[in-house]
Length: 423
Ligand code: ASP
Ligand code: MG
Image 1 (tube, rainbow, N blue to C red):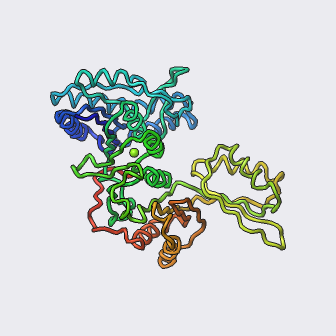
Image 2: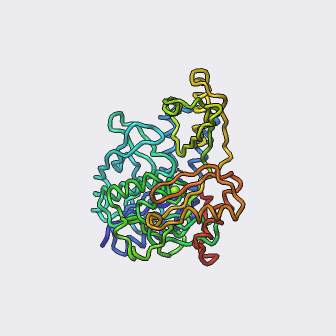
Image 3: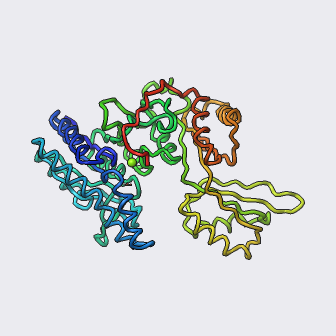
């Protein structure tokens, strides 16, 4: 008998029929003798619809109220799911994040879990019942206010509960069969990855792979939670996310795990910056002051004749306007020529622990992009990742070219997208 935490994403519970279908799966897991805790997302695109609704009321809703509004989505799906399971003759009870003991800090909209005290969940399991928990939400200790964990945060709820309860596995049910070597929506020949290390999954999630929320992977690594990403639409085995040393056949592991892509960043270029000590420090103090989370940075050598240089960096689309305004405000003080804003960029990232010990990976990546006629605008690397920025409209071609160049293509048709929009 095992303790299993299962998380079902929005596309797995898109309508009443899907809720009933998922309920059957849960009842089966329970009848097979497991203790089952279920974390559920809001149905379909409910969260986006609630956000749209708030926008129609006011362009800048108070964060506290927005959080209360958004948690409603998960409360709808949790109660419906509990009803559906009960209907199948298995006892089930639903709990909000607050009732389930998910304590967070007070940063509305992207709160961090600081403690998990799942007394009521344990009681429910002890009574032989299934516990359903609303994902993506918690409560602050200090003020008892409801918080949300940021988009995709139900994954983090599931992993945190799995850690807090000492579960044997955290199963993340989604609309594809696991983690793929590229987004199957772009590369139909993408292959399912059997096993991936926490470190590789962190890079993939940080670089745009939406199959798991980044924070959930950080949490899983910190507490050593075994994660199994799989489809709620099939019975196939999915992808196991495990510690690097626990990967089977580590010796024969492929050099490259996968290709991630991200369309959600923009590029700002500060043109004609005086090339003197302290300039980069000032520029990025201003950028940080605007609350921007920067990613890549490139500074060119200054032209000898002018003593001026250009500095480019990437940041999330949403941070663009505030950052441009903050930099414009200090143009006189810093003495640069002008600013350029470009939201038509795309980022491709090649991830694999094997690149540490295999030379030639970058050359092959750049060669694949050259052969596809794609220009590289920026490059950055980590120990197990190479990222390049391209034009947004050539990103899909770039992903396919690189996927083929690293011999990641599998049999066409293996990568089934069962539902959802990949948001
Ligand atoms: N419903 C939330 C969202 O759409 C949380 C989640 O699905 O994980 O981001
Ligand atoms: Mg998700």
